[in-house]
Length: 421
Ligand SMILES: Nc1ncnc2c1ncn2[C@@H]1O[C@H](COP(=O)(O)OP(=O)(O)O)[C@@H](O)[C@H]1O
Ligand SMILES: O=C(O)[C@@H](O)C(=O)COP(=O)(O)O
Image 1 (cartoon, rainbow, N blue to C red):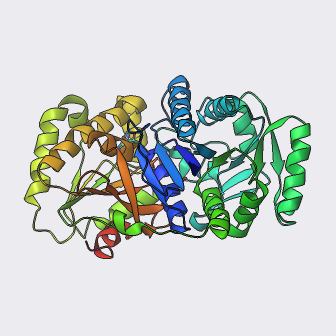
Image 2: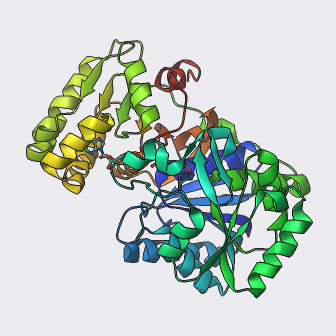
């Protein structure tokens, strides 16, 4: 039996919440996809299952999420958490609504919370509107996301567009009255048949109150901020555990793979270029000659063996260049061509001795992890909030999976220099 089962809709999202749970005292294991194995390590408090269900067709997202839920229930999991992006990455016909509905129905529950806030990384919710630092979500760089452009910031509206039930709000004023006030308002909203309760939060204290007020709810949904609250609340009664040692990065050659076009990743790539060898992907070669191109890039990476900092292969482009590529080659076609190039390149790199992969982008991290056939991960030390080093449970390979907008500008170098194996 274990306390918390997390179903994450992408791989960086999974390591993000796994890192907050582990850092705040839980013993965590992460699986990529629904595990085939049935034997869980002893003394686990939380199991995180990473799916690649953020931008696939919603029927597939629902089926994969239900399979994960059934696995968790079959292993005596007590509570469940659907982890999506702190920037609520989805579209009007996105997957957060259908997956939430399916999980509620399967559990026989009538209410859950919607809590993407992650104040430590600048994501706050006020009056049901999602902010990224000082900007509304829809005015932030997320409006240009290549796969899930976010053009609305109102979470109640986004949720009602995607899902089948009604959304309601617990505003900051109630949060600030404490967990009992929140609990009472949840009960009132339940009587009004409100199925999805958007919760404001602008600070970690608000997240701790959310966690306390929802301790009897079987399904929570949100970013990793509420996960932090849940872990703190759990640790206060069950004590803390730490097994970050098992996730420490291995020694061995490293590479940086960047497939995110977020504002922060653009800044990180620009900062890293003068520090290390770098290789920009040519979209035409990705579209036309993936096998030959992947072999060529692999040779280039191996040739950089003597550089102090790892070579970087990147598709990262700014909003103007991205728009131009998408207009010329199609948005889905170009993003898939790049993902498929990485899917060919990464196993070649592993065959050629690369053991540490620093990856930028959620979809890109999914591709890298799946193409390496990594099934389980131990959670290691945190590089930046929400980005830990993680280590494959069955071989000496380490990954740092960086969500598009997370990390500071010097992240790629810091991940190597401050965490020497
Ligand atoms: N230059 C580019 N042109 C078109 N699509 C791109 C380009 N660079 C990256 N992409 C695609 O954009 C998507 C970025 O998504 P992701 O890896 O999840 O990053 P993020 O974490 O910023 O959301 C991927 O599908 C990637 O292949
Ligand atoms: O919650 C978050 O912001 C992240 O954990 C996350 O899901 C990021 O997704 P990507 O930006 O696609 O990496």
